[in-house]
Image (cartoon, rainbow, N blue to C red; front, side, top):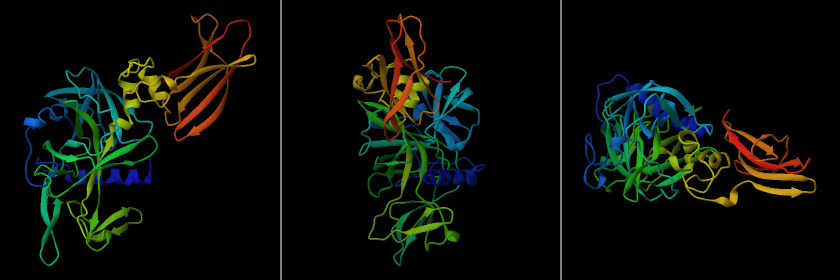
Length: 391
């Protein structure tokens, strides 16, 4: 796990610990209103509220008949309560890319589940976000004129709440792992949302083709902040203008960076990007399916670092011949530590066995290796195939 990831995960997790056991109140801090504790209506109807299950003190989202998704750093209460029914976890699936996503398999099937946002065009798109974090606290007043800059995190957590925002950008958080972030901007809407402690694991939804789809899982926020750059005076807040304050940019030892004006300098929340992990997600929830109908099953798409939602036959394994040998050139995802790559041979296309191939790394680009497997031809016909499997 990267240093930045450790810091970001700590922010929401520690605040959540401080709030545990407090009376149930509102979560998701809003710019112009105190509540949004009932399902969104009108143009925001069916925008994800119906897919949020209660996961201990947090939220989880079903994404397949027997799988739900939440944040890894919030722990495992063992039971998801979804539309009033308890679903017991029977298996935990860790993301080999070390993202903050955690998949859980349950013993009985969900009646409904959220579709996934698989496109990579999230920036600039409106979103709806859900959480169970702290309520909005006291206003942050700054300067001689006591101008409002934002709000401290308040007390309590537990009640589901929603808000809106727009995806501001994308930031890398490790190989094959990205975060969407959204800034807390003044004057956009009374429902403009920021997150706080306890909102981890909630879903972030974006609309596509008239359908709201899960685009992220709540992960972290900017902070803590300080009025003078000292750790002794640090605090957590939802800022629509943090200029002239200090933001902690390193935890050990604590380092604070001054945020110069003129403002506004809004703080942001971060949600783990679903579209960067769809290969892994579909490889677990539907390994033999073929989402993009290009002939490569979802497990194969994941193992070869392909997009399961975009047909691409040009990247499938390529067969060749070099003298008295056959070659099979294929792509291998280096971060897929949960997979085995097996080159198999056959003389009749019915019986397959390990080919005993000599393998060579042709190239490496990011987290993708191009491998050439060479197998001598002996005794007539020879067929090769690549089999990708989980141990």
